[in-house]
Image 1 (tube, rainbow, N blue to C red):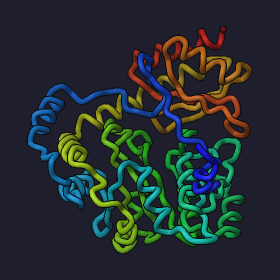
Image 2: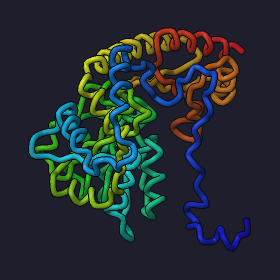
Image 3: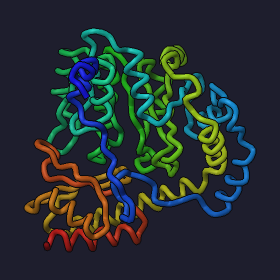
Image 4: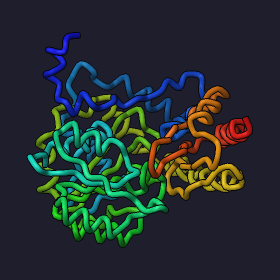
Length: 358
C-alpha cells in the first residue's frame, strides 16, 4: 500500500500496536481471566430451547428494556441512579472518552493498569496520564494528588480490583480521589464477583462517581455485555454517544435469561475464590517466584531469576497458556495466570515447576 493512503491515518494510531489475542486452540487456557465453568446442563437446555423464539430478522430493542431491568436488580444499583449498557466494558470506556474529549483534556489512571484506558484515550485524541503505583501496587496518594492538581483530568479510571495486579486499593484512598477529582471518577469493578467489595452503594453519595461492571468474569464473556451506573442526568448524556442497537438480540435474550437463574453463578464465583486462595498458597511455596496478593480471579507473579518470556514459552510448549506481562518497569519479569478449574490449576503448577527447572 502506498504512503499516500496511509497518511490519512492519524499518526498516533499508526504508532499503536493492535490488541493481540493469542490462539489458544488445544491449550489449557489460563490467559484471559475467564470463568472456566460452563452453564449447568439444565440451564443450558432451557436457554437453547428459548433461543428458537429470538427474532434474529428484527433489530433488537434499542433500550434493551428487559435486560436493563434485570441488571438493575442483579447488580443492586441504588434507586434513583441509572445505567447504560455497552458491548463489553471496552465500549463503555470508549463512550465515556467520546463524551468528554476536547482539546487539552486528559484521562488519568494508574500504572500498572488496564491497557484499554490508555489505548482508548489515544483512539479518541485525548492525553493519557498514568500515575505510578507504589512498590506494593497500591495507590501513591502524594503522587495522585499532585497529578490531579497538575492535569485536572476529565476522567479518572480506577480498576477495583486492579488489572493486572489483582489487588484492591485502599477504600479510603479511593474515596479521597473521588472527592478530589475535578471531573468524573469511574470505578471499574470487572472483578467484583471475586472481590466482594464495591462502590456501587456509594453512587447515592457522589454525583461524579460512576461504577462500571461486566458479566464477562461472571461466566458470560462470550456475550460481551457491560454496564455503567451513575447519576441519571450524567448517564443520559453518555447514552447520547452510544451507537443504536449496540446490544444484539442474542445477548439481550441470553443475559436476561441466565441472570434470571443466577444462583449458580455465585456458586461458581465462590469456587473460584476458594481455588484462588489455594493456588496462592501453593505458588507461595515455590522458591523461584514472588507471588502478589489477589482479590480477583487471576494471580500476578514475578520470577526471581528465570526469564519470564522463556518460562512462558516452556509453559506453552507443555500445553498451558498464561499471560506474559514482562515489560520494563513495575512488571519486569512478571507473568499472570487465570484461576481455572482445580484440574487446570494443578496442570499449571506441574508445568510451572518443570518450566522453572528447565
